Length: 330
Image (cartoon, rainbow, N blue to C red; front, side, top):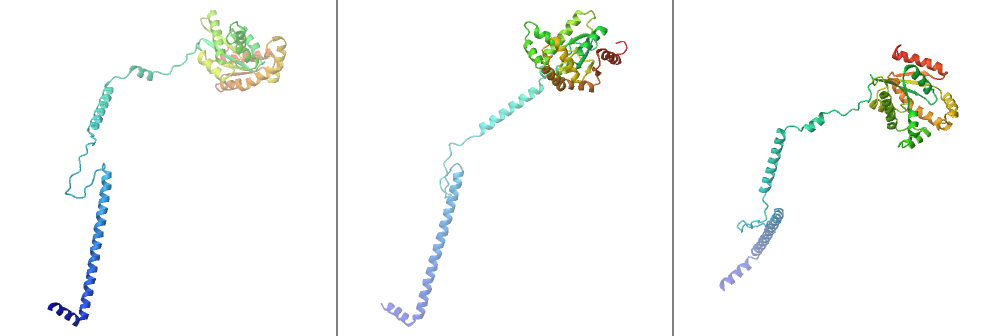
């Protein structure tokens, strides 16, 4: 009781010193509380960040649970863990088997069938007749150029066999049971070209018949009149039948040829000896047959004869040109 009064007396005697000390204590206490609060917030924030990071990492590693305390229990063992050793063994066995197969194929002899097939040349077509045994002259010219007349005189004087592609086609169309009859008839009427397979086959058969019936030992001379009409026909004939020795081309103006054909139509009875068919034949000859003449002319095989004059003058010029090519003994 006495000490309390003494303290109050002291406080009353020194009011300013006591007030200063109290203020200082309160300030220190407030500062201490702020530091404690700051420290607590920092610790809480770091703990939260670590826990979140650990959880996210655990989710990326097969969803394993993360333990925050190092002294805690270890994570449970994953019983679903996949073992990769069987896959490694399977890959090793497969690779080893493949290498053994490759080495065995290297030691095996090559396949004779495949080797011979690779080394064998492409099959080639051999002509039916040799040029050393058979002489072939293509006789070309527009419709009405006088080819038939000149061929008849060459047959008479030089022993040629005259094969007219047009005559063979007309005979085939009239042959009973011919499968090409109607086709040939339509082509001739319209001034079109008969498929080359038909014409080439008819010419080859006619040549065989001639050689088999002659006594020349398989040798012969042939004037093939009005053929080839197209370039593919020329190629096919020389490939399958026989290469041509030369081309005898009778050149004549269209006006002259048309006049001759109309005159011939009065007595020939041919279906194509009329004005409409004649003009179609002219166009076909210019578009398809003239390229054949141009082709052989580039090869130096064309003998050109002007067939505008009369038959005698044309024939004399023809003989002159043939002697120039084959010699005087022709």
